[in-house]
Length: 388
Figure: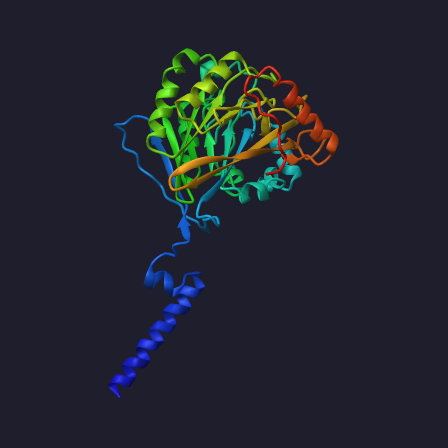
């Protein structure tokens, strides 16, 4: 009788465990035999200092997904966008972004409603976050005369975290709009939201499908002389540790549709040092793409979500996507495509909602702009595919 009672008790315990595990979407196989070999936990690793002596802590977030292609390789889709600028100017009583947010019923995710599915479907999205996430209203003396200062409440980080943006670069001319403390607020907010950031002192590292990707970023405006040696050295160090290295540059001249000679030199220097992809921004205009030694250099991805102007003179832009295939430790490039966009869902004013262009005339205009301004580039791509 005691044996029967014990068996019944054991059975009840097992059934209870199975019920509890079912509620949490686990299986007994996970517990008894370990993880499924066809599943990997994507690990987001916090930013790592470029200082070899720094104490690099990390924060880990996980998601499960099948990773292997039929041939046993891993295919990683990366999306790059231009400027992501939200919020307004704390010196002003009202701003155009908050006005639009009210029109949208207070839904903070309105900016990404037409792009969320695209960004959720890739493996890594990198945007240039140009602004601050802070409650501070402090304006540094050197910024007092600036026409634009950008800040947004820390809660606005949900626009990134809820919509498939995993990484941001923080090297631009607005990240210090409210000083060092606000910059730290921004980094802390991104970190706590699980978003990896990179800057000139820290490498952002993210693990995607078991592959570690390093991201570096630099503000080049008026700083090229300081960077000609630093950038290659940083990239070489990163490439020695990580199979894929992506470098973002804030460079060039505003409203220019073609890269400067310094952009061209720095972009190719980055590739020579080991970069697997170069993403550029700052001009607020789309610029051509080169394929130099098999590596894509996007000289400018223009604007993406841009709250700096209620009706910019050019609201057309592009989003860039590329794929890396990793097999037996070897990384190969699997081509790219562009997604022509308007930075607004409306044509009469900028509502800060990037939207994929569908009219042939609008798409042709984007393609013509890219081709026309790339004629003098030695390694410009042959075409700009819209599909894989």
